[in-house]
Amino acid sequence: MSGPTSLWRLANFRNLWLAQTFSLVGTQVTLLAFPLLALLLLDATALDVSMLYAVEFVPILLLGLPAGAWVERMRKRLVLLVADGARAVALAVVPIAYAFDALSLPLLFAVAFVVGLGTLFFDVAQGSYLPAIVSEEQLADANAKIEVSRSGSQLAGPTLGGVLVQFLTAPVAILLDALSYLASFVLLLFVRGRDISTPAADRRGLGKEIGEGLRFVVSHPLLRPLALCDAAANLAFAAVLALQIVYAADDLHLSATMIGVVLAVGNAGGLVGALVSGPLSNRFPPGPLLIASILLFSVGAALLPLSTGATGFGFGLFVVYLGVVVYNVIGTTLRQLATPERLLGRMNATLRFIEWGTLPLGAAVGGLLVAPLGLRTVLWIAAGVCALSVVPPLFSPVRTLMSNPTAEVQSQVTS
Image (cartoon, rainbow, N blue to C red; front, side, top):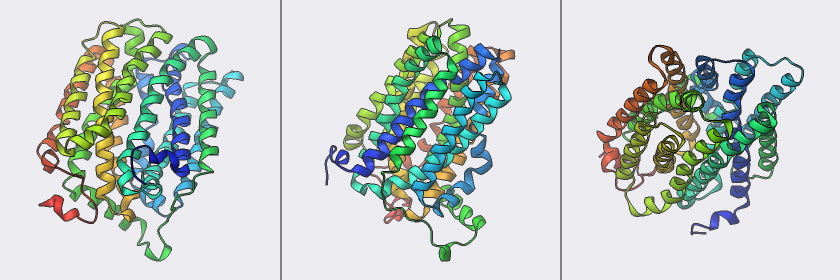
């Protein structure tokens, strides 16, 4: 099959897409509800909120590298199911604790850690599973559709979250997120892809397998500069994401509903990016398109500290997510096509470790700098770091890449 609409005829992809959509909408609700719950019910400080965000990414630092080797040894769908189930149970603890007057910041930290652990394994498994249920020719379209799902959830989730928090309380909003992971779990039961695990006879020991995946990424002329770019950009964005609710509430004096609307307007840029990334990838070569998308989200990051109200803040976020999603679609497809199937899990996990490992650092440092420097200054620092993220791909073969590589013709990208 070919054509952009043929993927909707594949039940496996359709169910995987729907499962992710349900969980992502709930996640976006919690993205707003978690910090607001801490601020409104537990008198949390800006540092508390930033640390709450950081804790969710600690599992990447602890288990990011071995996660890939473990996932390759297991059935990918089973990993997805366990990850969804664990996140659903963890989030359900929050409204139960609230009902029994047992809610506390340590409990929220523990829940955030479990959710982060589930997200790590889910993302690694999904990135390895997707190429097994669609053809190579459909992969870019599949990634674009998944980004449409992600961006659509980012558009609807914050608005819904703001309304739920304001009228039904934050614990109820988090309960709905738990139910969304349960819905994802049920849909994944109907996905049947070519789910291959590494045979026991081919396993060479966890350390050697992790080393092979790490060497593959670090030595690859395309994956290495993109990983460094992502690490720098995520370091900056972690501070922004951890503090954006505090900035909107304390500096811009926006209500919970208005914060949700602003985040939704900003995330509309991601939806636009997901919709245009396919046509752009067909018209422009991947290398220059990746460089342009990095420059675009860097400009958006600089607009955030310039904002004085809801309109400016929302527009800055719109530009950020427009660039980020175009970058994600093109970059994810490039990585998947450049990696042999047997290394997909370790490639995904290694990149998660390198790229997302800077998230807790960025969130923590951003929170620590608020008291001495102020929120707006921290956002300016984040914008500067974001601008520097273009340097690794700009001075690498990525800049002149005219077509997507494949694992079979990998030697072409090194010339």
